[in-house]
Length: 388
Image 1: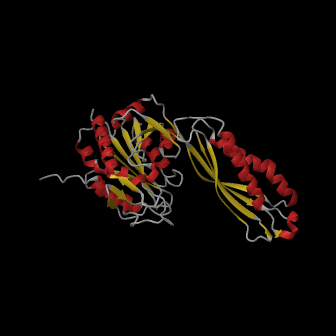
Image 2: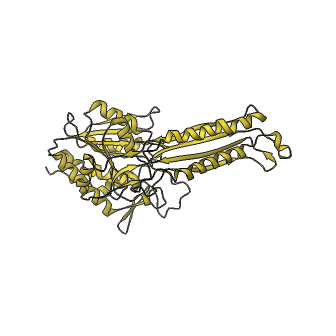
């Protein structure tokens, strides 16, 4: 009996894009699909669900489970398409001019499809080291899902030799990315008629002063630590949204801002957040409460993940370059789950995957077929290396 030919990555990608795994919803239909895909090939997998039971990570090991191996890591969730002007259905993979269009095609279901497309080759190879498929949830909202997957992996298997996180890098070896801390500040003031403004506490005014503080910190950081391997070589501070007030003749009693720091790995990101909070507590709140004791500023964390800082001479870096067939390396400003694998699992990690980050999160997101082919070649070399 002939063994069926393995599905091409593009065919699998069409299935994966068909699942709307926007982070606000469930990823379980996609997990069901991958679980069944592996089961048909005799490969067991383990779900690691979230506390609601509506989302799950999936971990599968191919090859011997009692020796250190390699992790192929990718997230299953995607960003929303709300308000974007797509020229085709974002959840139906569409091919045009050597490109595959669809939400998540680039970020990062293309990598997942390549991994699944090479499962038969992994299964039939004489692997001396295991290859772990690690598919996570909620990366797009702060890398929230992968920690439980990593803890399960290191608790049940020998610590892996390397992890390759398949974010879109055009198959360039990425050795570092920035840490991120994002927060919401809720300013509570006291309302009154605008003709009596001094008797109120204007929440918008105090939120604006907080925004200026963050801006000033950003200007100072731009003169501080530099790493020219990054496209943006400094730690950055940014306020993204501000909302408050109801009418011009009413002193607003509430205002919210959302801000973030993207910090070089050598920078203490938590200390930067603490400086903002200290400014609020020491400078702003005493003024506010001198007028109205019930006023104040509260902070809520939106997301947080560590940076990645893999040594350019590390064994995992040399390995990744050999597998990728290239000698260059770089660092990126955007975040990935890579830092989590180092922080929680002490697993040497490189970010490398098909597609360009320039296409991620946009309308008409796409991945080039040539990128999938490059990733396939990389995975073939991973399999060969695991057979040694």
